[in-house]
Length: 359
Image 1: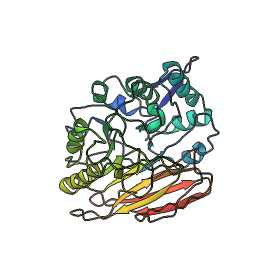
Image 2: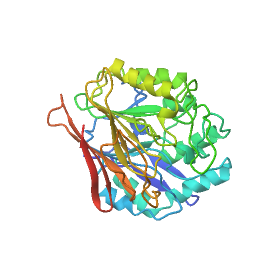
Image 3: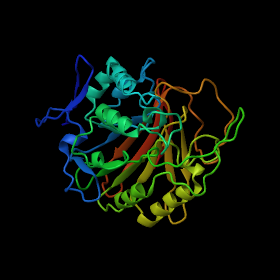
Image 4: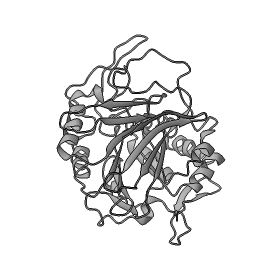
């Protein structure tokens, strides 16, 4: 039986997630937290089996949002925001609050949230507060507080007391455990230089950090979890796609290699990446030295914001064409054999399934 998530929007549109204990009641991940249950994870959310996870990014609170009832038909157990959940682009606390409240006033979204047992997410640049922003952004504490209010992150969540918004949650019983690792690619990210002109391109930062040492140490602990049967790593920006001129992990080549090396060292089971940011969807695959299976990065973008036309952009690691219709991502887990679960990822939209890939 699914837990439920009560969404309360007051007259001032203040968003609160109410946790209850009855079997028919909805709950946020925070209300079932027990930090001591899983020493590697920030919180254990539920022992409910997770079969279907939906995710998406690049959602303008100002635009029509026709995908919510479509996604609801997938009957997801968990919704993951992968960034640009709203377009705040401000340091002003009043505008930040108003931006999120406008999203919370969207009846299609609130109906969707009421139907989904669990909800979590990370941010990208526009909900962080500044386009392509990083460590230099002065209003990060404000942005964190507003995003946590929007997501219903509890006051006792361990991430409340540390810098950044990186955190992890466990879902499911011991033999069917899903770990969701939410990376923060903004708070600690060093600056990157950009060429000038119409086709301005970010230049590699060979020395800078993307995650910061505190987050790297935390991530290493997450990947040491022996009880995670499926691990979903959430990165707001693309990890594998390396040839386009916009934001990506490859702008920090040493950080990207460090990430690949860490995966090869820790060998987490059934691990893949979901990302957003690009206003286009695609699936990218990379073979890693010391990693038996191809690493998959499923980019779903966006829920409202997509390219107006197809551009000629190279991604030699893509196994799909780009999707420039509004889209969302879907993860389906078949637990028939808990020792070797089958995972199917797809990019979907108003017209159905655009691309699917078996992990």
